[in-house]
Length: 257
Image 1 (tube, rainbow, N blue to C red):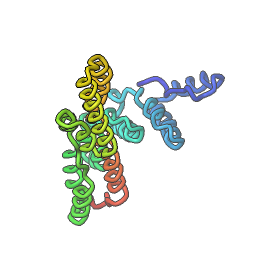
Image 2: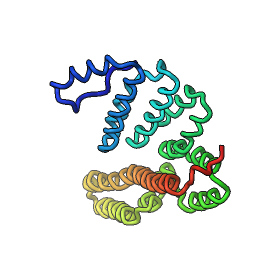
Image 3: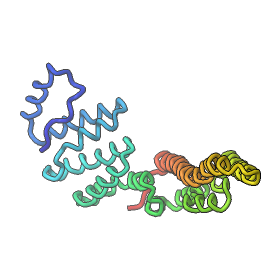
């Protein structure tokens, strides 16, 4: 059994008393105290603190009924705290440790949300379809297909920028950035040519070359980063939409076993 939950929010004079009371309890009572504190932290919006408190419980050695409660709360707290990797890990642990079919059925509703947060799109989609009624399945499928992001390829954006400055930013959806990059590269090229033909070789090479490098090489870098940021934003919006739909509209009393 793990030590008492994190007590950094408790005044020091009461720390020893709380620890003594905690250690005097049996395993079930100790877990109950931890879960009560976790629930209080959750109610106050301290999801990360709730997860950290609960993660100290040695769930591998406790009774099966307590194990199910602890692992479920670990998944829920990690999901609410946007600790996506932790949520996926404890979902796997739940599947490994909890053997009761009824308990596994009880947690099925959160599986698609964990998959969504970790951007496992195929798994999330398949899990949602598997749990929906026929009518819900049609609605969910249409919403998924309509809102699923049109992700862009950062590598393609960089290649486009290499071929034509500004085209990578335009591909990423930043037309204004693309135009600035294209005009900057064109102006730098003209600056180099004009000074070169008028025998200002040093200015042409150093100043013009520096500007051209800034716009050309900078465009290669920003086109990729802008594409990645666009993808992240679209993924975040999609995850929020689908998670909200799943929680609010799927009647889990109708979910098939």
